View 1 (cartoon, helix red, strand yellow):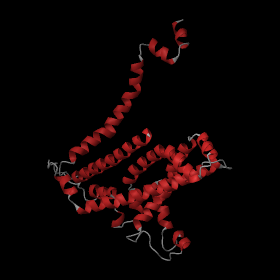
View 2 (view 1 turned 180 degrees about the horizontal axis):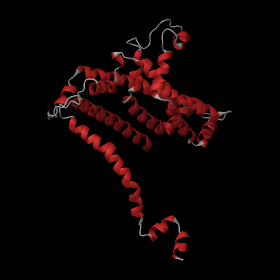
View 3 (view 1 turned 90 degrees about the horizontal axis):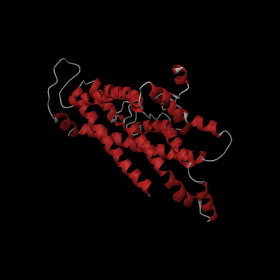
View 4 (view 1 turned 120 degrees about the vertical axis):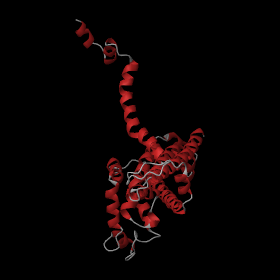
Length: 301
């Protein structure tokens, strides 16, 4: 009889009948997640922070000697490291600006009813679902001066995009724009679909022009979601490694992530590379914080 009565109870009541409280059930799901984060995220973060204050090299058996802030001072005083940051900043600006313009522009075109809209939207999302290594190799072939289709379309002859010091970085940025513009498009399309239709109807009654409607209605209401897209893409662009490493070996395309990789796994400067990783982390957090503050201001308007 008792077992039959318990089977008629809902799961929460059965748990309570067995002596499990809501707090116990919650902890049952939270504790494994916390353990996973501590082991695979927090512990390596603290461990690498300790190495950043040492002269440790993973290629030797020598013990790690504490040297204080020497790694940080050396890195911040290295003009070559600052050149990598300049290259990265230029790449982030071109890449993110291009993604916002292309993605938001496509979202404006898709924000209307037309046949096969769902199919077209799905096809446009395909680039961001591909592997970055595959995309890098694919576009490397497109840029090839001998048989690449880009030079053929624009009649550029044997212009070597990825071997040219001035064009290589922009070639990689164009590839990133092609791959991640659909992400901005998807978020922008969600924001555009949430704009109340009666605002456009009121603007049409007042005979407002398209530019005025876009500037006064569409852009202010979509701006918060657009800023969220910019935050995510800025963080990811700052960490870009695959595309630049696969597509070009020019020093003008050596992003800070590539420099970090070379320092850690080719030069085996483990301590100094850990310090560089934390400098990059601090910069990304600072940029993100600026974006978030501006996002809060936009939401308050």
